[in-house]
Image 1 (cartoon, rainbow, N blue to C red):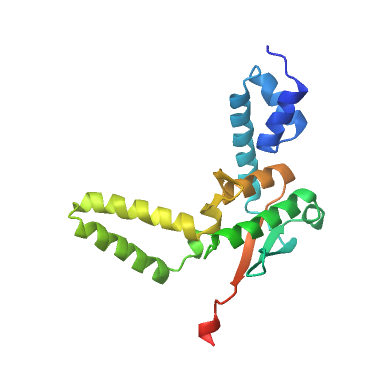
Image 2: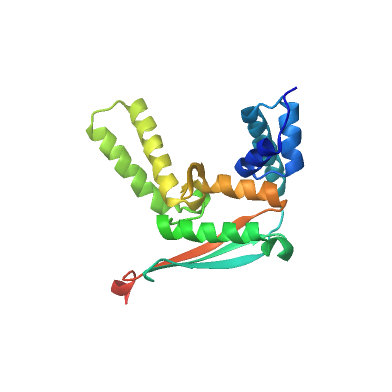
Length: 203
């Protein structure tokens, strides 16, 4: 069995957010294989997070963020189960990161189920018409439309967006990792993004 060093445990903790004992155990069980230990911890974290996903989250915090120059501002409500977790550094950092994400990427909805059909249907029809003009057969058109629609949803839905601090992860991945680390259900319930000039024509 390969010797598990404190540095190995630290690196695994940094990448997975798991506790030191869990990291040490994972490395020992996988004979020091870092990638296998990491995969094991991620799967375990996802399983734990899935069990917590249905639990009520009525605590949390409202985080605000103002972009340099004051031209963009964000308010986001991030919920958890207890005020204890809401006051932890990890949770507060997550809330700040989510506010930063919204300021930078301007999502329109939290997740796919929040997108109204009357918003999505015209987009789908436009993708279909575009593919049809290219003379593609129907079975190919369906795949093209599905692919473009998924990419569009990745852009407009907060949880599906690549995380601004690490585009190898989605925002949902980051939240799931926080759920696994903090041991409570965490969810984004609402957000607003303001930008100078927007809404001026609506007066």
